[in-house]
Length: 608
Image 1 (cartoon, helix red, strand yellow):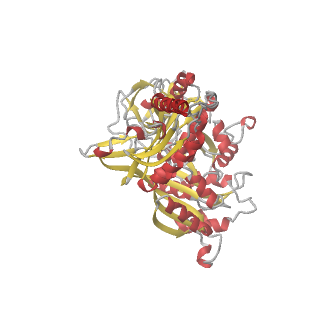
Image 2: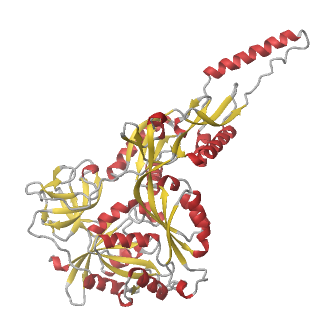
Image 3: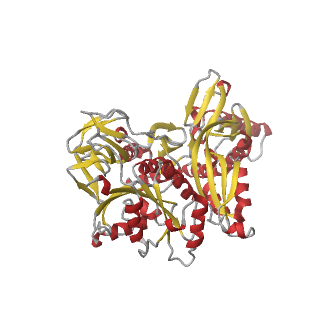
């Protein structure tokens, strides 16, 4: 296929704005898949993707489209993940394109991820085609949303396409706009091979399969390959393109999108953002933008049945083959036994991995409360990365603790401004700016349905526990959220330890802001007092910061009536029995151990 007849594009949208449905209509209209094989959300191959209505793994499909000039064009649609946790994957997918369809819901308008995605597309210098979807809904306001797009991003009215992906209205016009507005790919056809990896997966027979966009040069089967970032060398066992199933092809050339079966056994040797070149005549420089994936959220996974430890390790091994962003290291907990400390891109990533472990591998696991990675500056001016609170150095050796902070964008109806700002103030959010984005607001300042964009700085740690749920609750589900990590900042943080019978329960240790350490410690101590079973000796439960106890509760011991058989007699006999019992309880407290039941532990984790 000649380069000037190739168009590479993506669809960017907020969650639930109809991205997967529009992809279905484009595939259907170009007859890429036979009608008997068509199904809803065709490009979402995982059950979790279909159930949640989001794209987790990137996918691509080649469309053959005959334009009005009777020339057949090759349109490569590169589908992107649909959640902010996978922002890096989205950026690499967009780097493989020359254009993007900006999809906006005609009823909901511009939302937080709409802004984030369009800024990402502009950074990659893409041609953007604005599309207003769901115009068939009774609550649709396409004209008002068109004015929003015009005001926010400077689009002209004649550039905006109105469509309904559900019934196919306007899809022909979208295909025509892709051909006429998006420029063909540029690249050196005769140059050294440079192919951008925008996704990869593991196959038991073919090894790592890299999803690539060829920027320069060309590639044939059995060509020797070099991964420019990791240095891994291999041969191309198989190459081809997506329709959307993998179709083998003799070659891929500059501008085309396809796959390469590398035969590599470790997906970390060929991750997203990698540049593939020829090992016999390598390119001088890799493509820009490569960054190794970095876990931002950490949690411990422990099997409920200790005998499942080996099964959990095997399951994590298999998941990591297809997901290089997942990291894990073995660890043990006094309360939970043997397990793994796992690293994730974000809370959604954590949720997906946990659900896949339970569904696909039939494991019952306990996940500890999620935490973030901290940077600790010691008095020796050494910076230490801490992912587990139990590994925090002694307080006397710490100069400062730094935590990751976010740039947060929230779009909400104006009537909920007070509730949202109160929530963010409680979470130590730093206000940056507020802007009304509805054009109607200029005409009617009191209009209740006008929408506001709030920008804040917020600690990532403050987002981990129920922030999103509370945001949705405070705004009756109308608020939308997007964020990106801005870096590490020093904060007054302390390590909060929970002691049961004078022993630290490492799995309950957390790093918290010093202003909330006392109320949080008090809450956990009271919760444990209600949940732990009584023993034959008194059990103290304490919350401590270093050597300072900030909260304490005691579980009263069970008492055996040793005087039951004394029917009268000398009082000294009774005193002897009581004294002997007291001494026995004192000895028992020194050697006795308190086991925390699984139910109590889970309940405390939900509280914290």
